[in-house]
Image 1 (cartoon, rainbow, N blue to C red):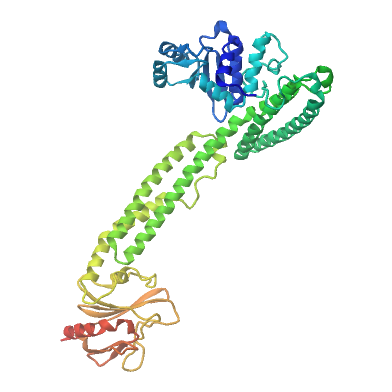
Image 2 (cartoon, helix red, strand yellow; image 1 turned 180 degrees about the vertical axis):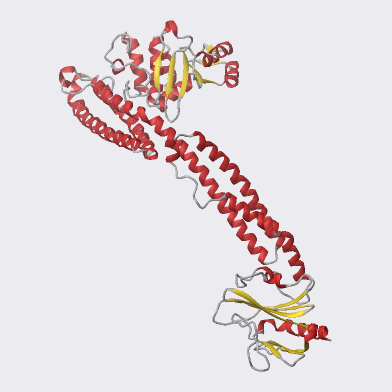
Length: 543
């Protein structure tokens, strides 16, 4: 049953001061805080203390003012109440709540001193959001009827169990379902509802107990992630169950005791719920601590793994660019890999620092760094790429200044088909590379004028690669054979002539030595455009 804002605030202003503090404590209980109302003689300016232990410890102290709208809380009072944070231990926030309002000066100083203010309209909005109008009405009515809800031993369920820290299941609130002005002749209407509600609560308590037992088993089995998930589910269901118990208790107050002797009291259910809460609170915080820290370690491991994948990707991209003679672009990728490596090292240091301080339960709860992650190996790989940059630039220069046209990658990347060395390493320091001809997939066949195959032989059935190289000093043939490289070369002073065939279906080049031996390299169809220029170059060298 809702009130108009002005009406409710006016009625709350008439409630006894201590009763109003109890009411404020109840509002925080509905929000799942553990509450304690201080005694007036020794409150030190604190009216209500509220705490939560999950998911992390929090503590607030509340100063309560039953002021009329015309009476404002000013700056000096807020400055005074701000000091409450220092007067008690572990206080996270000071809250000042009034049924009246705050001056502009009070609001300004509250922002500076981190004091939370709740004025009359905000209090009304809180009651409305929590659906706590019947709770408010119970305190208003107790004032009108001269009946206390805490200090006088009233039959209200709030006196069954004191409002104290560590027992958030205790205390009750009336919830829509039983009208306050019900008469005894309503028994036929309300009794079946109460019986059904009793059965629902009994069933939910049983299920909640089982859920709590599963959470405990997960905790003792060191399955902390599962335990936290189940503990949190217990807490969610516990809040709903508290509301059902409060609704049940509200119904009992409207039926004569003779009619409900066979029904258990709300205290019985609250006690059962408190026992479940006690069991949850025993290990939930420890499970949460372990799972939270283990999850943090897992996030760091995931970040390191992502960095490693990024590093490997940059190296692979850089290598492909290098093979295409894009040296500068390749090294920009290596630099990116180096940057990612630095960040991976920083994250690794954080991870190792935490591991050194955490206990074994946390360490065992996460999977750890994958074995394939080795930052030192990646560091070596990146360093080798940077070390080879000058050499790569030089080889790029060699290919650019050659008379023929070929890819610089041929000099260093032969797809692993030269076994002993890269092709560039077969070029002597005192000679200049001019032409490189790539063989067909099965390689060259070298035939002498006598009809016999010359050396090195290349078996087309074996894997490997072969290259015909023209320098300013000689003709060089290099082939990867089985598990080694073989070479054949002839200087220009031992050649008498060179001829080429540039037929559309085939291309070949033939050398005749000064002793009349002929060597023919066939299958150069894709190299026809360079054969004529190579022939002219070789003939000039022979002359």
